[in-house]
Image (tube, rainbow, N blue to C red; front, top):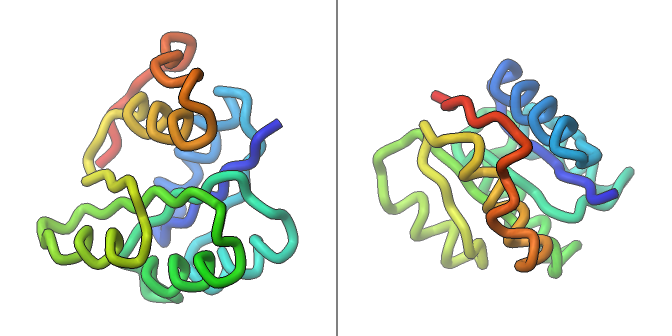
Length: 134
């Protein structure tokens, strides 16, 4: 089973994502900041990381940099509710290929994870509900 590491400083959003991916058949880990996510990566290697960018306890950029140094092959999906395009540009500069702006439909996140893990799974989101996330 593939493991998704969710990193978001909003516990409710993180828990929603975690439960959503569990229902979709993934193992999950939840970290409430970049530093905690780095520790979780050391305990259980994720197959994909979904991280918020702006967080007080180790931001997404610190996490992305850490992952690129220590787990260079792990796909990263960055997300933010900020309208500042420079955040996505910086994430892209650090090697993140996929970004999502909050709010987005959960099916968009699921599809992004599926495409990062295995392109042949992309589009197979019908079995999972698609609530909106703020």
